[in-house]
Length: 83
Image (cartoon, rainbow, N blue to C red):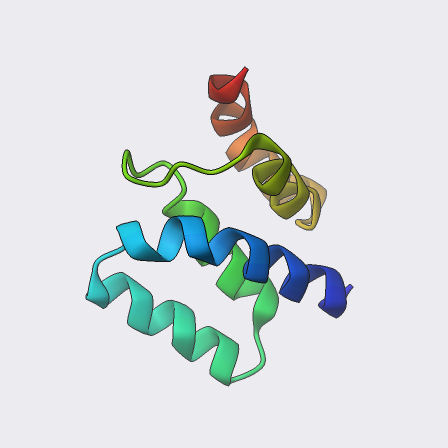
């Protein structure tokens, strides 16, 4: 599971991080540094709705599928907006 989370982060970050403001990037990086990739991925996905974040649907789908079911529900509208 941790490998999937890191793969999702590695794929998603190049699309989302440039659109994030520094005060949002610091907590994301802090979560990675303390070994919380799940929370870091959730943090990145929280910024996936930024208009500057142009994420390929396959990258977004993979990232969301790495989440627990109850957390996936939060991002269903985002996925639907891509279709």
